Every structure is written in C-alpha cells, then in structure tokens.
Image (cartoon, rainbow, N blue to C red):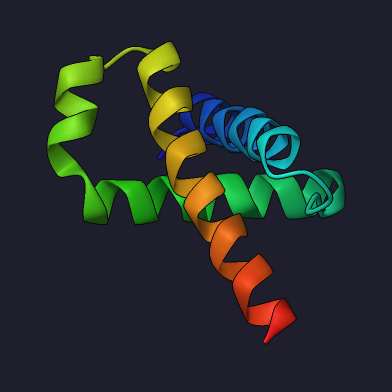
Length: 84
C-alpha cells in the first residue's frame, strides 16, 4: 500500500465515521475513533453487502457511502450493547 492510498483510505474512513456519527446521534468517538469506526464499517459493509460496492461504483463517493453504511451498522450495534 502506497502512502497516497493509505491517506485516501484514512480520509474515506474519517468521512464515513463522521457521517455515521451524525446519522446515529450521540455516538461519535472523536476524530481518531471516527476514523476507526469508518474503517471497521467499510470492512463490515464489504463482508455483509459485497454487491453494494459494485453497484455504487468504484469511485470515492461510492466507497464513502459503502463505509458509512457499515459504520452506521457498527454504531447501532454499539448502542444496543451499551444499553444492555
């Protein structure tokens, strides 16, 4: 992985985590936490919805949407587990 691709990967994770924090109110984790949530969310969405990434396209916007969906799912699971 080159430095450029790593930076893009981190930026997509940051944006996805930030968007997921806005969608799921009250469950933001700061900038580093949001990056982690976005990256983990991208892996979750890639595992659960592999065809979604193909239908959204291979662009950055598609990657952000895909990672955001996974990050929202992750935050919802965290919310449920915190309440239990």
